[in-house]
Image 1: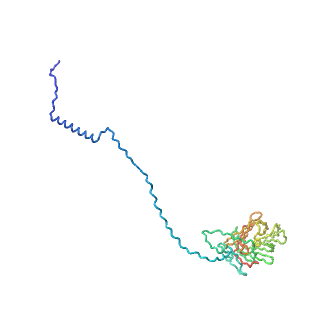
Image 2: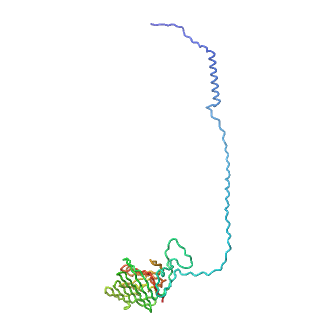
Image 3: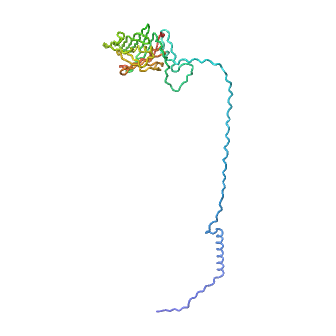
Amino acid sequence: MHIVMNSPPASFEFATPPRRVLLAVVLSLAAHVLLVGGAVMEWGNPFSSPPAEEPVVVKAHLLPPPPPPPVPREVLPEPPIRPAPIHRPATPRPQARSAAPVLSSPPGDQPVASGDVLAGDTATGTGNAPVVASAAPQAPVAAPVPPKASPLPGRAHIEFDLLMEGKNFRAYVAQEWRMQDGRYSVSMAGRVLFFRVAFDSSGAVTGATLRPERYSDDRNGRVNAIDFASDPKNAQVSEASGNHKSVALAGPVADLMSLPYALALNPEMPVGTLLMMANKENVEQVRLVERRDEVLTTERFTVNTRFFDFRRAEGEGGVQVWLAPEQHWLPAKLRVAGRDGPVTFTATRYEFDAAQ
């Protein structure tokens, strides 16, 4: 079924707005124009580049450094006024004395204490020069020994401390020296409890040496005796055991007691000298290997000495002697290194007559 509607054609017409609406639109557009225009004028065109700035010119000038401050002048004190020197007449200079004076012997048989005789001025010296103390102790220096020998006294008494080093045994011994009319004798004896020793030597004084004729060694009654006078070429030895032997002599003879006094008569004995040395029941050759001046320091004293070192030609051992020139070249120490171990004799006291 078809329904046909017939209607008149539609038509459109625009109504004219009222005047008040038009006036409001115009005023609104004017206000926007004013606002947008003011903003553009205040901020400028955002798409345009900013105007170029003018360059700033900086001018610099180097100034010279300021001058250094003036150095203050040091004011020196005026030198003191010294008096004019006084001229005095020159005085003669005193002569210097020996650093180790030779001590004179005591009169007669008066005993001399070991401290008075042996403790000289070897450490500090004498003379006019001032003594300057040092911070640390210094080793003593031996004073020069005169080249010529001082004559031996006619009589001397010397006390010794005997030490057997191997057994640490000590004893007191005394030695007696005699020289008269071309003859000499020297003996040493001592006793400690049941131990007794005695040594004896006698002979002739010939020129600047001694010539032993008989030597004996007695230890607790066991006596060994050596005879040099019966045969000038051989020594006849009588041992404590009863045995007898003959030993050929290949040079000058000395024994334990006479050796220090033979050296006192010849203190310039050349190094290399050979001697036939008698000790106990032995007669062996020894050689002088060293001779020097030495300051000897012991438990009792310090004294200038001349040292002699004799060594056995075969094997070890020998005899060492220290002589005291200031005590008329008497022995100050004796050390024997034999088969029985070292034995040392150290002087502790001197008594002697005037030298002949």
